[in-house]
Length: 407
Ligand SMILES: *[C@@H]1O[C@H](CO)[C@@H](O)[C@H](O)[C@H]1NC(C)=O
Image (tube, rainbow, N blue to C red; front, side):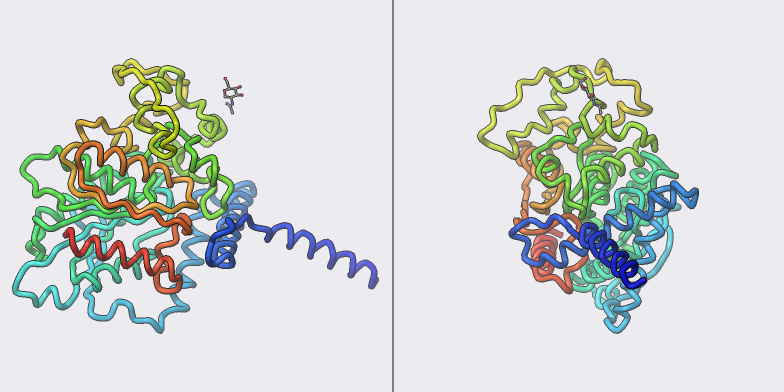
């Protein structure tokens, strides 16, 4: 009996040790935080998949539910901290899109108009919420004394592209057109977002640059954004695709949920077999040239081809991967010219590092004023920890400093 119990104990301990072994890069300053983040993401993903296997919800529904519950439990634990003090927070709709508006009481009483910011939250287009980013958006509104509009866009895969994009455009346009109702100067409205929200913020900026009769967005601030889906073998995907804070496998799954919800193609995408040889030699390959990340590489030799003539393997909606509304890095240079001043935040330990680096490089080459903050020792999704984690706190300060100067 005792032997049996001891044996079970040893087996459980070994399994637990094995399970909790988490790859942590050497120079991560808070390895425990990084490892816990990774283990949580990995466990939640396993639970989501087991749930789907057992017929309890789909993987994305389960991811959304479990992470949502974890985050709201975390928020409840922190209720002592009244981060909303001095703010008026209102849930309303802008042109049919649900939004949460954060207004500093000081801004309401101000005789002059104040700047505004549209914020689009991350979560792979499938999960997280305005609630999950409540502390971050409240902090930005309060610190800068500006009105922040956080957008509750429709989520994939129930709503595939372009639902999230359309909602983000509609809410942003409404804010630009109705700024004075919030005592906001419509000439001083910017847009920002993290991860999938950075993708949407960049896509909205590109789209609205072409709209006539609308105030211009003052700036775009993109936080470790996801910007392209034609190359899953960029140096950052290769170097960091195994990190559980955001694995390559999960990032590819997110793109597919957003594109067509057909995960049977996941391995095909991961191997870059979702693009043809013709596409790999076209201007679009030049838009993700690895030379922008590894300067000693030779530039890729590419040929400009007509978008409509590009062939793809048989995958539903696949041509959408070249649509800048879906993947802003696919915008032509002519479309990048004249975009507003841009802030890009990237993290070293992030499969999306190179998406951000490449967009910053291409925008700069197109004559756009770009400020690029690269966080050498940070990982994807670290910013919401700004009140507990020193590196995230410093990054938040830089982001706020940029917005203060450029709104
Ligand atoms: C990708 O394409 C290559 C070359 O055609 C092939 O060898 C490989 O098996 C493919 N992999 C996947 C996952 O589709």
